[in-house]
Length: 124
Length: 124
Image (cartoon, rainbow over all chains, first blue to last red; front, side):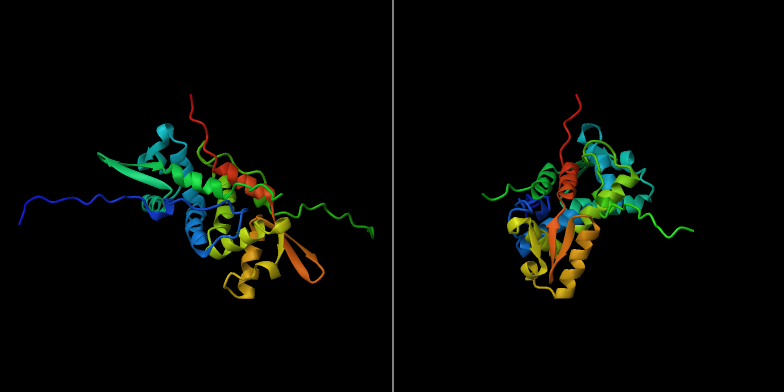
């Protein structure tokens, strides 16, 4: 047996970040498209999660550690729970540096949601 | 006492349609802004509601009656329930004409959600 291990190169993002979907006004969504898009909307469908998300998104340098954003009036475990949900939906990414975990908005997820809400041009 | 009554001029839309809010990336949301915005996101955070919403939004003429959009694999009462939720969130409006109720996307709500997901320019 060898002492060396090959670490697998695992893509850390959830599949919610996969390109999805056309504008909601363009055509009927398929069941799969609706599942993917609903997961992202649901993640932002809670006031505390929205406040945490906007706190990360608007923080200097585009990233924030929990120490910067935990003043939203809920307990620390609740903050952690909501940040986890935002990560699972592909809306935030995180990186541990020293003592703290830093959170950053996943721009492709924000862009995907923006596309969904684009108003498609009327058919000629 | 007078027999006449002055009827108050009530705006029929829910307050979810009220202008709300800055882009999520611009600054931290207040609790009130987060409540309003989360209500809209939550309404789209369900796959069946998203499919119904896209069916209305993409239907010819920008409106659809229940008879046009009830083929999403759930019962008629469930369709009605989800359409009611979308109306309560200010995302759809409805109008009865003859036998059928016709649904239409509320453009100001779609625009408000689009604004939320705009990426604010970085500060100089």
